[in-house]
Image 1: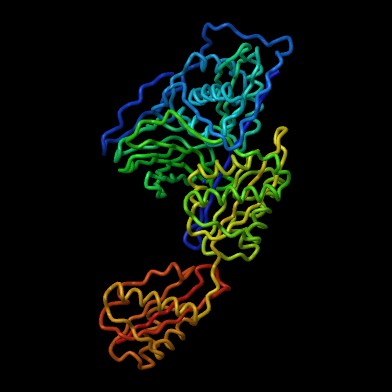
Image 2: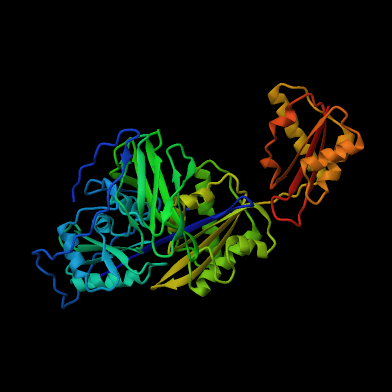
Length: 571
């Protein structure tokens, strides 16, 4: 009877930053934005009981549906647009129930573990219009725009369509059940929204869009439009098993920030100030789930501007020429590099060793039927790199599961945690691993991206020259005389740098015992992962010290930070 197409977007991100960090991208009136400094909060809205309105039921058709017209496929790269049929939702987490919402909620009541969500119903109506106009599913970017505009928040959204000249409601229930079975890491109860539209022409077809999300997260109503400087509260209830929530934000200044979240049991709350600059303000709620850090929701607030009602995009590229995992890896790498170039960043070097790690993790997810950063057999990305002896100053990992490589990368870039990895200027290398598996009659790509900045190979001479050059730059910036390199102080620094645990007091004791600092001295020691990450203390440039000795030793047998620096200055 009906024809269905689906897109699955499921992504998660984790970042491990060397030794410093281990973690891980109806009609309502738009209210005036709150005044700066005014708290913006809202209470929880209860779900009304669905009632069946007086609307004629549509029986299951007894005969074959009328032959369907053949529509031409959109040309890759050509422009398209999404014009909302209703004003955008003014809040996340709430939407008035329409007659259609109540009708479909009642029709689906017999399904176990399914909860009708009017925000998803609002998104489904927009998507039904999109399909009736373009005769294909909405690309990831358009899907994200529509879901956000409807006030829905969750990650893990599936869209599907049924088109026919006649359609029984049982077909919708069957499609919902089918989609719910495709969700990765779904909660006990999934959420669903249904909307419909009609194609234009001599034989109009009824288009029913079905949207399903994995459920579990409950968000208290939150504004989608705020004034610059307004105080905003994001709160709700976490899915079962979620711990350590945090919010990553990206403001109009294109700077990432992490917002502290107060979590007590399943409840969470975070209050913070909106940016002072007008523009888009993105926030992603991330929590630790059994398979590692997982994005739960992403909000796109508008600061000081009207909510957008239109989205312009371009149709995704044709991927019919990608017929195996290696070709998929090449395409995935090209998409990643294009995203970095768009942000003015240099391309990453493809690292064969990182690719082997990434490839093995994608195969592990395929073979063992899970999707996440934490593997039951290999642990985290830090564990996997350690197992192969790969040492790095910092590293990170992105994963995605999608029938389209383009949509996979679009989903990763949209997610803030993933985007932070993709456009980080600190990473220099990447490994790409792709495996595929059958998923409900389609091929699904499992993509793993492993980013790293390898620990550099630093010789004592190279290290000493780099530190001396940095100190010389510091003297010029402070307008003081340059230090004179003193061999006696350099010998003292060299002896201390080879100590089991070099310290400033140890270096001063050696200098005094050698009688090389008759007019006082100052010593400084540090362990750094990279010579680009040295911060010199101001005391180094004080007093009347004029002589200097520097020693540097890398300890490759130790994890980063494994570059040891000792500096001694004397009068």
